[in-house]
Length: 159
Image (cartoon, rainbow, N blue to C red; front, side, top):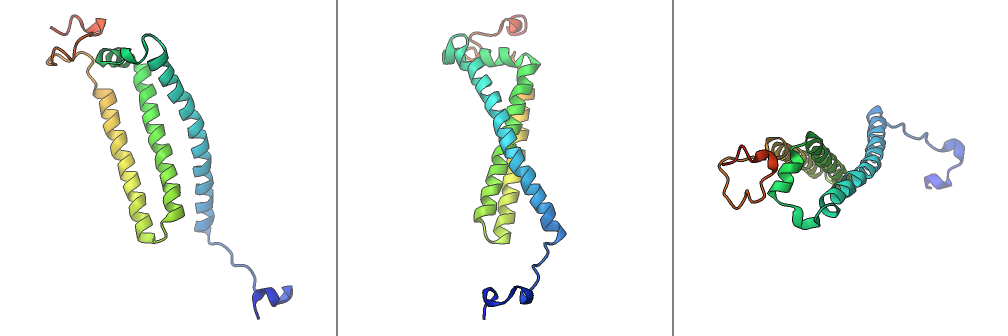
């Protein structure tokens, strides 16, 4: 006799979920909400980035060292690019975490993959932040071909 054959009065009571699973469910809900909100914000950030870089001025032919140096001379663009970097990495890592949760069945493998995702996200954000905030728009010892089209604010600095 199976549970489907028993009368309702004889069915065992449903098991209650432990508190940690309720917390996990809440975390998954916020993770799902973050994925949607960050996706919308990333669309705005990325399309604005593409519009400024590709559709204004001379298009893709204008993008060189001088263009980046001139753009990153203004703090707004450094913060803009950092925001894109951090949000894109968090969005991508969260999406990959969801995929790992769906397909990795062994707890050890799931744990290793989660830690690999976290570590790679942190490394890429740290390296990207270093590039963004230590970028020198007026390098003194750079090769001559690199400095073709030096931004106007570097003319007194670069020999």
